[in-house]
Amino acid sequence: GRPIDPTPAAGGPEGGTEALRAEFEAEGRGERTTVPLPWPFLQDAARALRPGTLTVLVGPSGHGKSLLSLQIAVHVHREAWPWAYLPLEDRKADFERRLLAFLAGTWEPIADSPEGAEGRKALLDRYGDDLADLARHVSENPRLPVLGPDGKATAPALPYGDVLRWVEREAETARLIVIDPLAQIDFDGLHSWLGEKDFIRRLIAAVAHRQCSLLLNAHLVKRPGKAGTIPLTGEDLQGAAEIKRLAHTVLLLEQHPERESEIVPCVGGRIKKSHRFTV
Image (cartoon, rainbow, N blue to C red; front, side, top):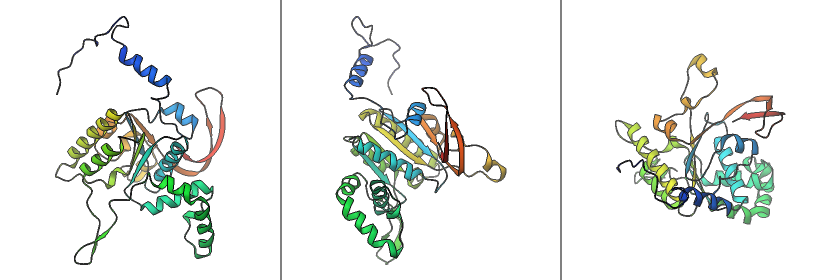
């Protein structure tokens, strides 16, 4: 470690504020800014995905975390920002179906009914080039089953060190990095929480060094009985306490029956919206 030095950095008439001035100048040139979200209200309220930060997206399994994070990635792509996506539950082909759905503006590519196959192929013919451009940012799932010498399928282990090396490599060029989800990363040993603690600290160091933004999908802890009806908080995030403490932003995603809510934008006023998801 390094000794803590409370003295300000040496500087000229600005009194040691040169580093902050340099940040302001980089922001003015558009070189340092928060990754844009597709939803202005959420952008203003959460300030997620700032340079060099970790944002955790947490919610129950099957409630749309992957779809939401992929929607963010598509928006970032359309804004001409470089990005990288590491899926750890689904095949890359499943993500390509979702990407095609975003491009075509229809959920038909997600279906697998025989009668719709020709229509899906037509969509692929129409949007194939754009899809290939998006898909090159998505890695193949390293946890897909492989056949062993005995002919039996096994899911390979994914040590957290391998994920760190992937992040460090992608951070050289990507502005947004997505890992989906944390639960599929292996933290071996009797005290796995120590591995998670080391992983999160090194993860934050990697993105801070390159000033990129990392979005990490995570699951919720299971709450039995009536506790399951209590509104979600950051304490429901599954994993070591270090994740909750060191994440710069935690976004909680809930899926529910359609309801109407009143939204109060940061700019003022009130808007009523019908919705099935709440962040």
